[in-house]
Image (cartoon, helix red, strand yellow):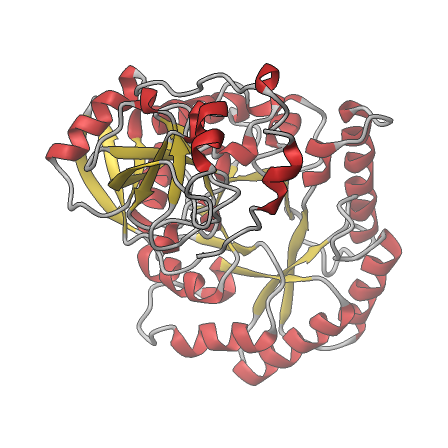
Length: 421
């Protein structure tokens, strides 16, 4: 358990006086979570769960399809949807077999689970990781890497490494170039740098085959006050088109129908309604909408993913080393009346229901028995469930064995989670 110093309490002058006394934030479950709590009390294995609301997921998927229409094909981001069942469900619902992948073991997983898939790397991998993919691919696999897998190249050095890898494997490798369109996170910095790489490919016999470009523009969702989002989008799009223009000077290398990938959950809506340079967009988190994606562009989407954990203990509020003084703290702040200990913890998630629960900054976090504080107004008891809203889905699924599926107030199945996205 990580403990914080309690000495700072004395300097608060009885915590700012009763005039600044916090109001009681505790409330019982909302009807939605009251129903879910009763459901989990009846039908669950008694361990922390990830719950996917399929009705909300469907609504988010339908909204996404309406926004993109037929003009912008969709590529599902596997790291944000890291469960084969979830990817399969969404791929069928959204009529796509395109996936963006970020982790070598997941490339092999998807090649096995989706043998007709089109896989694009979302980040450049070491050539050793790429080699490991080929070593783990079964000889009889129906997945055809030269046609269905596109590796990402971000520098001249990595271009040379993948050329050597293709030679060692004695098979063609498809590549796309990562370009910097304003995020300043690497990739080819300007059209001249891309042209130099293409010149090297033109003059050097290799088994590499150029497929297109990938330019990520997450910075557009976080423009500073002195730049409007529309201006930033226009500038980013112009940068993307300048890279396309440079690539088109190499007709022997540049395909007639190149892949022009970009966007992401935070920015796909700009491309859907604006003058985009892309011919496909990548989206993942917007379909589940964790709290990091609470933005104006995603205001119509609904949260569809919850962490659920049973309450192991309900104890009167207390802190180590402050036995007698804690009653003053409780009297001043009714949101410290009770301590609630959960099964597991330290998830990237914030308590949501019942309302008024929070982590205790004076006590710290725990991955084994997460401690929440709240008032008696929550009405929580041992074996009730606390629901937390994830901040993000990336890296979350690997902390759970499965996703539990909710529809119309009933548990209707589960999907196994991937080991890591």
